[in-house]
Structure formats: structure tokens, C-alpha cells
Amino acid sequence: MPSITREEVAHLAKLSRMELSDAELDHFAGQLDAIVGAVARVGELPTEDVPPTSHAQPLTNVFRADVVRPAGTPILDREEVLAQAPAAEDDRFRVPRILGED
Amino acid sequence: MSTSASGSDVTRRTAADLAAAIASGELTSVEVTQAHLDRIAKVDEKVHAFLHVDAEGALAAAAAVDAKRAAGERLGPLAGVPLALKDVFTTRGIPTTCGSKILEGWLPPYDATVTRRLREADVVILGKTNMDEFAMGSSTENSAYGPTRNPWDLERIPGGSGGGSAASLAAFQAPLAIGTDTGGSIRQPGAVTGTVGVKPTYGGVSRYGLVAFSSSLDQGGPCARTVLDAALLHEAIAGYDPLDSTSIDAPVPPVVEAARLGASEGVRGLRIGVVKQFDGEGYAPGVRQRFRESVDLLAELGAEIVEIDAPSFDYALPAYYLIAPSECSSNLARFDAMRYGLRVGDDGTRSAEEVTALTREAGFGAEVKRRIMLGTYALSSGYYDAYYGQAQKVRTLIIRDFDRAFERADVLVSPTTPTTAFKIGERADDPMAMYLADLCTIPTNLAGNAGMSVPCGLAPEDGLPVGFQILAPALKDDRLYRVGAALEAALQDRWGHPILEEVPAL
Image 1 (cartoon, rainbow over the protein chains, first blue to last red):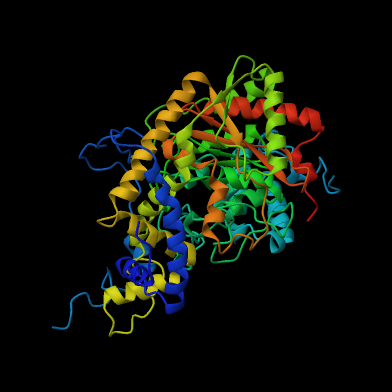
Image 2: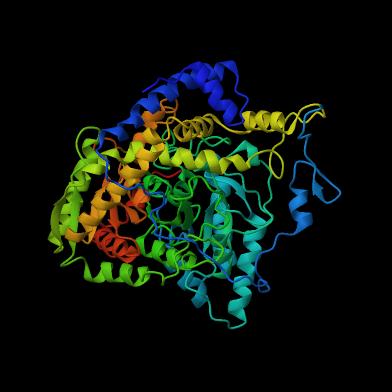
């Protein structure tokens, strides 16, 4: 199994949308390497014919009828929701630019 | 023996007893609630079980219960009784932080189903309890707001992630609390604080409004000082919820009846399986001793003891630390600084992506960052089969071992956690050492069945509480209460008092 290098941590941080400091990259590299080394033990068990379990409960799709919900069903209040946003404008969430300048 | 133990002290009484006193008019809910608020004001500086105390809301809810009673309305079995709610459940208009800086000051626009059911049952919510950030941890040291301290020894951890809920019970700040258990976060804090904690069958209690960490494992449940109180709370919060698509549409197991039956009739004829894998190196001598004594006691009470071999359980911990971080890396993607919570670096020049990355850097603590990256790693192409995929297969083997075990035994038992409460700071920067605290509790989460921790004494070497874990098949939660109540009654007979009478005065 590959070891987790500082460069790999930087890549994982980028994929995870976290701007880690240099000190954190050093610190996490050693720790993640130790953790991955320990959890790799799952490979010791023979599992050729074993199906994976993603969920302990044998549920397939759970549908509800496509009807207007009865009164009392929680519906979020727009004002209340926007009051908790980092920034709001014209009854909408205000977000930083999403597209590049060019 | 505690000097402050006194039958007349309202905060020492059980929830069942307080509910009866309120229903009979011996006490008002306002009196009971005020006594607990006073206790919180007196001791929480030392314990730090609460992140937010809602004195005004609690007293208003209590007054409403008293008004109902005065009007002759029939009250529910926990009406007027105060409770401490883990800060991972949304409470409309009341701060909900999940122990994270990224949600500091957030006022949720809706109540979790658990919150709503508590209100409907006339339970009085005192406030929100401290926890490891997003429920990731076994000590409450990962809270962004500072650790909770164990009332048995303020230098030690109260367990985690629900250390605040468990400590509030042991410090007599609340007779009831709610926790969540993804890998042991209800049961392990229960064990190290001498309190009772139950992880119901997955899907037994709604996850709507429970801020998600690992969706296939997270489960809310009751925390209390007695098995009967836990059962009463279990019935108040459990049951089908159309707002949670993984909620089980089946009757709630008869847990209150089972708790009463266990206390009166015991465990005669029940088959109790001792899991061979949860013993040996790494288990403290006092934990092993109190566990063995409890098994012997159950045998004396007429239970049949069988040994259970579940070899895949040795691989539950590594499988969990692949599955839970994988799900966490996906769930916590919602904290993107756009719709709620913290936003850092939005100076008009930075892109949304840059603002998200700066916010997550500033808002998440070290353990959350570690798990997000570990999950991202386990799910990445090239590593997926060896890590996440393989962990899912191990999960199947664990479920098969449980199925085989429950053919031979009605319940399985083990120590809840290998050691008593460790010192604050002792494992803080050693993730693998910290993870070992959940060694015995994790298999149940992976299999989706039910588990309880009930106090079984103090370890002779350090005088700290030891937890006895009971596991039952899915939807057979009542068996936990039958065995837990029987053990609790027999041990109290032996000791002459409840274990929490021995907690030092704060």
C-alpha cells in the first residue's frame, strides 16, 4: 500500500476544499499514514464471494405519494432561512463569483 | 460516599419519580426545572456539559406543563421533566453548533423530529450539550468550545462524542439527556460516567434534523441514570417518521414493559452470549473484573451463559474508520459557506471555491479535517476497492457473525469500552489510541442492531465507573432493557445504593 506523503495530503485537502497551512500538511501526513496503515487490515480477510453492504437496513427506494403535503408538515420559512445565511440579497443567497473572469 | 446525596434534593431524583411527583402535584415542573437550572449555574463552570442553556425557554415550557395539569389535562409519562439535548439536533431559534466553529451562532429554522417529539411529550429542554465536533471523537476534547470534564474526576474525559450529555447526568444537571451513537458516542460516555446509554436499532429513532456525520451509522437515543428512565425516554422519541427515509415503519419495541419486567422478574431462561473477541490485551484489569462479576451475577439470576466467537469483529474498527470517514467526507461537503454558518475571505476578489476552502480551513478542527481527508482518500479511484469497497465487505461478514451469534444467544455482552475514563490530553494527538475507545461498540453500528451500556461498578484500581454492554438483534431493543434492568437491580441490591451516589460532590 502506498504511504501518504505531504504532497498527497495537499491533494486530498484540495479535493476536500480545505486550504491547509504548511504546518498542518506536515502534521496530517504522518497521522494519515499511520491511520491508513492501520485500517488497511480490512484487506486481511478473504472476501472473494462476499457482497458489499452499504447500509445495514434492507431498504430499497422509499417513495411517498406525489401529493400536496398536509398542513403542519415542516416547510422552511424563507426569511428565517436567509437570516442565517452568511450573505443574502433580494431574497436570495448572495455568493462569491462562481465563474472565472475570462 | 457523597455527602450531598439526599432523597429530598430534586436533582437527585429519577425522571420517573419526578414525572410522578409533577403529576400528583407534589412538585411543579417550574420548581423541578428551576432546581436543575440552579444546579447548572452552580456546577457547569467546572463540568462544562452545556454549550447553551435556554433558561427562559425551559421555564416557559415548564409553566405550560403546570398550566395543563391545573386545567386537568392528562399528562404524558415524562411531562414536565427536564432534559439536556446534544447539540447535534436542530432546535428552531436556539443555537445549534455541533461543537464546531463553522456553525457558531447558527439558529436553525426548524426542529429535528426528536426535538419535536420531546416538546410534544412535554419534556422540558434545558439546553444543548457539548460534544466532539460533528460527533467525531471519544472524549469531547474535539469540541471547538473546550472539553467537558468527567464529574467523577474533573481531570478526566467524560467520553465522547456525547460527553456533555453523559456528564450532565452524572453531575445531576439533568435527569435525562439525548445522545447520538455512530460508533459508540452514547454508550462509551455512558460507561465512563456511570450512566445508562442506549443506541436503538438503526432506523428506530428519526434522523430528521440530526446533523449528519455518517448516515448509515448515525442513530439518536436516550441517556439516563436508570434503565427505566432510559426506556421512558426511548418510547418518547422513537417511532416511524416519514421525514427520514431510513426510519423503520414498525411498532416501537416494548422497552418500558421490558425494563419493568427485568427489574421484577430478572433474566431466568435468557441465553446470554459473551463475545470472545472483546477481552484480553488492552482491557484494564478492573474493567475485566467488573464485567466477569456481572456475567456471573446474570448466571446466578438464571441466565444461560454461552461463549460467542465472532472473528470478523476484530476487523470492525478498521472497517468503521473507512466507512464513517467516507460518509463524513460526503456529508460535510454541505458546509460550503454559502447558505448557513461561517464565511471567511469573501472580499469581493475571491471565487466561491476559494471562499469555501478558506472557510473550511478556519471552521473545522483537526479531527474533522483528518476524517474528511481519510474518507476522500478511501473513496478515490485507485484506492476505492482496497479500502471503502473492502470495508463494505467486512461489514457483511460482521452482520453474518451477528446473525450466527443471535441463533445461539438472545443478547450478547461485553465491556462497553476497554478502559475507564482516561486523562484529558492523554490521547489527544494520537488518533489511533483514541479510536480504540470504540473497539467494542462499533460492530453494532455497522450491523444496525441495538446496544446499551449500563454501569457495572467501579474499577478497583482507580475507582472509576465501568460499563457493561448488551447487544440485541434489530428491533429487539426490549431485550436490552430486560437484561439491563435485571443487572441494575441486582447490582444495586449488592451495593445498597445506585452507583451515582458515589460520585464526588462538585
